[in-house]
Amino acid sequence: MTPDLVILGRVASLAGEAGLGWVDGIAIAGGRVTAAGARDAVAGLCGPRTERWTLGGDVVAMPGITDAHLHLASGALEALELDLSDAQDRGEILARIRAAHERMLASGDTDGWLLGHGWSLDAMGGWPTAADLDGVAPDRHAAFWSHDHHGRWLSGPAMRAAGIVRDRPDPEGGIIRRADDGEPTGILHEHAVKLVAPAIPRPSDERLALAVDRYAAELAAFGIVGVQDPGEMFDDPGLRWGPTFFRRLAEQDRLPLRVAASIRSEQIAAAAERGFRSGEMADASVAADPLAERHAARYRGGWLKLFADGSLGSRSAALLEPYESESDGRRPVGGPSGMLLDPIEVLADHARRAAARGIAVQIHGIGDAAVRAALDILETLPLPAGGVRHRVEHAQLVDPLDQPRFAALGIVASMQASHLATDAPLIDRAWGARGANAFPLRSIAAAGGALALGTDAPVESVDPWPGIAMAVTRRAPGWESGAYHAEQSIDLDTAIRAATVGPPASCGEVDRGRLVPGQRADIVIVPAAALAEVAGSGGTPEAVRPLATLIDGEVVYRAASFDPGG
Image (cartoon, rainbow, N blue to C red; front, side):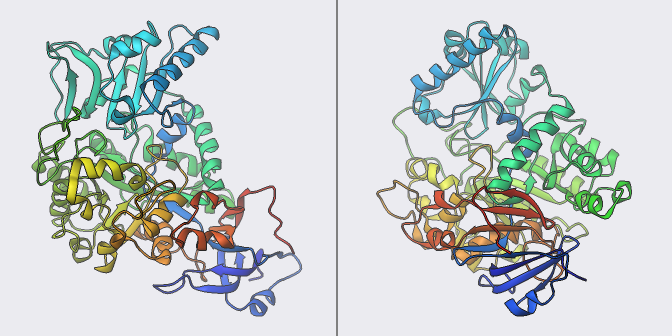
């Protein structure tokens, strides 16, 4: 087959099981790589209609990145809301909220909801209250996710709309934070965040689709060609959105990137009624032409996402031993050792019900007790057809006894090394010497365990490169203390594979993640220095900015400065 596109230059094909697999050119036809190898051999395949790119020595091609843990619809919508994540302290956070409220008033919006995200317990210097919000946004329905999205801060009107009053009991797996007199303070922890969800107006499907388009363009500019969405941060028991929404977009030839979308426990019944299963694909028969068929193939059914525990930032991660004592009042939520959000037998029952319907399971586990519980549950489950594998999400603190279990059980460690940049100081305070077992990438990989890297956006930035760099260097710009437990760092090629090959492989997609014949032509062009900079101890991952991104051989992002030659 005559190629549609030939790319000549340095290409990291990731052929084989180690190294970057350098070749001097690849040919693409019908959305797939048809040849990879020596420059002259690949160039000789060109026909009269073949587009030819000749890369300069300062750029390289590599497989596109798949983010193993990114909340796509939530991130798309939150990109339109108030972002507090870079606010430095309580004063700045409240000032930004006041300004947003006043902008709404100036536009004539007196009763709409003010939504946002990004505040943290540490930036606020303590737990905020509804009275804080009411002081800067009087009479406004307001709801703000915490940075880790395991808590939500509500205004007085929002609490009343959600029916959060003194005598309302805590839901299973959640806590309504209360003052000493029993009155709710305005903070909802863990499963309690669901209490306000029904009161918040839902976007239309078309608004969400447009938000996803805009967000996907941002992702493409970072070299991201696909995401694995572990479920949205809003209630949707009827499964109107999630996999149903993304599959519908794919069948309408409107899905702008590859998406594997998961369900949550409250959606199991709706998923069973619809026949959802892991690895399912959109109906290609609705596509009108081969190009539309390729677009329809961008959708995959994901996992059942369960939560074993909370988070480090909210001090609700479940530990085998109690948290270290903190003198500033940041007591663990749920008890001295954090909290399991549901009894293990309840999680196990959800997992068994899903596995019986052909749905693989991913379990959120931050603390070492939660990771152990997740492994214990997943160990008992059969694998669904199609090669989709069970996963533990985050695995931030893993007891040494459990680190080799990932390989032994064939369970994927879906980790977000970018969290280490912000969490390292918290780890030292909250977990103490146990920090030596935090983000144990090398131990898991060395035992033969499979890694899948992601960002956890919108909790963190959508930029995947700082996370790749952190996995290799275990240090962030501005750190004066050096690498954080450098013994757990991984090689650059291992990190690149965990960001390109690992995620799709965990979903049974063995035909992408590499640039070898038969693989889908998902490609990112990056500065040649980028890979060296990421690997260097003084690397500058912020400098890694792709020049072009292709999905199925189609250009979905191209920097104005990029000249592909000819």
